Each structure stands twice: as C-alpha cells, then as structure tokens.
Image (cartoon, rainbow, N blue to C red; front, side, top):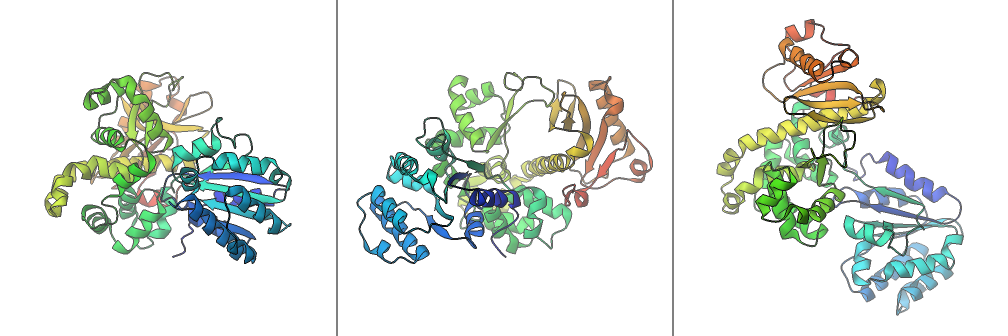
Length: 464
C-alpha cells in the first residue's frame, strides 16, 4: 500500500505555497506517526528541491548529511566534499548553486537541529532576512515534538516569528479515511479497529495484516514484543519534559477522573499546579477540555471536564495499563478478561466520537457550526449541533448495544430535547445512532422532524 493516504487539503496547501511568487516559509507540525514525512515526500516527489530528514546527531554530522543531500539533489558533488564550520557556511554554499527557478528546501524533524544547535532558528532568520525572502524558493520546516516546534517556529518569542507565510497542524485521520486500510472489514469491526488505531496511519498499517480487532489488540498492544506495547511511554518521553507527571495524569484521566480538583487529589498536587500540564496535553491533542456545547463562555465555564481524545492512548491508559503487570508476565488471556468491561466502555466512547464526526460532515445541511455534547444534572445528550446563535439544531443519542433501538428509545430522545429546550424543540432535528440497528417499531413510527436513523454501515460513508 502507498504510504500516502488522503491529506488532500494539506497537500494542496503545500502546493499553493510552492506556486506562490517569491519566497515562502511553511511550518508543518504535529504529533508523531501521523504521516508528516509521507505527506512531504508526496509533495516533493515531482518538484525540484532538497529534502533532508534531520536526526539525533551532533551539529557537525547534521551539517555533513545535509550537505550530502544538497549535493545529490542539486547534482553538485562539490557540496559534499567541503567541510562546513557552521550553518552560515553551508547555507552560503547552497545559495551559490541552488537553481534560480522555484525550488524547495525541506527540513524534516527540525526539532533535532534545534536540540543540537539551540541558535538554529536565529541562524535561519538571519539567512532569510539577508536575501532568501526576496528569492524564489519554498522553505519547509517540519517537526514532531509539538511543544518544541511551536517554541522554535510559531511563538512570538521565536526568531522566525512573523516570517512564515503558511502553517499546518497535521491532525489524525477521521474514521471515514481509515476505511482504505481495512477494505475487508465490515462496518462494525471497522469501528472497533478505529477504537484501537484512531486516525494514526502508522498504527493502521500495523493493524491491517491482523485482519480483525481482537487479533490486532493481542498481537500489537497486549504482547510484550508487540510494536505498540511501549508506544504510550515512548510518545510521552518524546513529547514532554516530565513524563512521570504526565503519565500519572493520563492514568488518572484514563480511569475516569475528569475534573481538575479530582485530578489534584489523585496526584496529591494542588489543582493550580496541574494547569501547565493539562495545557501541554491539550496542545498535543492528547487531552481535551469539554464543556456543554451550549455554554456561552466555554473558557470561563466551571463545568469543564478533561478527557483523553486520542483513541489509542485512551485504550492504553483506560483499558490496558491497569493490567500491565499481568502482561509483563505474558498472562494475556487473564488481562484480556479483566479489561472487558473497560473495553466495552471504550468502544461506546469511540462509537460516539465517530457519530459526532458524521454530524460534522453533514453540518452544512442543518446549519450547525459547532458540534459537541450536552449535559446538566438531570439529562445528557451524546451529540448536539448548534447554530451561530448557539441555538440547538440537532440532538442525538448513540447506543453501542447488542439490542436494536426501539420507538421508545426515540421517544425518550424527543422527551429530553423538549425538557432541555422547550422553546426550540420543534425545530431541532433528531438523530439516533445504533450499533445494532432499529426494530420495526422504530422504523415505522415518525418521531421528530426528519429524524436520522443511522447504523455502522451509514457511518462508513462519513456523511458525504
């Protein structure tokens, strides 16, 4: 299978940056395993330029290997023969031989250059300001350690601040986009697989040969020699500076602790000390703060709760980590039995997330601009869409159950909407998502205005 999957919008953004007149500086960043390198290779495959993947090497070695990449791409062997005392010398040599026509210079894993030479962003800023911004080229800086990439390229304190002409935070693929990794799975099994791999292409490629979710779970995640057994710890070590604190925080959130005060009690830390850790996890798109979708001021809302939003990390910390000691001794069957109830809850969560993605894809049909959940002390709704004025335009329930939904289930949904928004109930479209479909009573009765009745097979199309 070709490594490049979807990413049409991202590829188009890079191509537009290349086609723009003059010089362009484009920042591409995001967590590991999302396919940034595959995207850059697809972009660069038919265009002239230099592509270099930095590594955890000394500054001298990165200089040497980048000069070799320049020599090969530009067919200038002399570039690789010289010794360069610093980055200024290499960039000056590059300027002398690079093509006058539009070309690119892509530096992948840029954070490794920054770790080896803390002044690299200042060096590039000086090089850019003394001529490159007036020349016909595209410079792309790409990195995986999100916090470091932001500090080096996007924050107001970065030497490169104000010089970028484009940027893109690469997000995980959506449920509808991973279908091509698993062409032989039925719709329900595909939802289960998404609950493991999420939208991470690397995980999906690993899971593809396994055939089914249960096999993928055992071989990739639960086996000590599985490629994803230590993945969560590896990601934390790569992305954050204090993995022990972050690990404890994720264990707590994965177990269902969601409020800051409760997290502080669990970790025996003042709640105020957790703010920077939670902010970092939110920036990494690992954790999200959630408030009822109808809150007028989400930032100041006191009803915020924190949840793991990456499916694999949620699976690991919420289902697998409590049984890690058993897995270390190879007791997979015992651990697998113990985590079943947790896994059922995880599947229900994944189904709910996929249902919200479906509504997002169809939001233009209903006038929705924001999609989320609603809850108060008495009522909870899994999916709610609101318009620009914050008024509800869709309300839905998601049931991951072996029992088909009935007309009574639909009537209960209708009753909830009337209870929460009596003045808007007549204009709110209802949506019911059921793992096991609907019985005759549900399909034959009309409930609400144009009620959507949707099962796993409907979600595979993504609503488009």
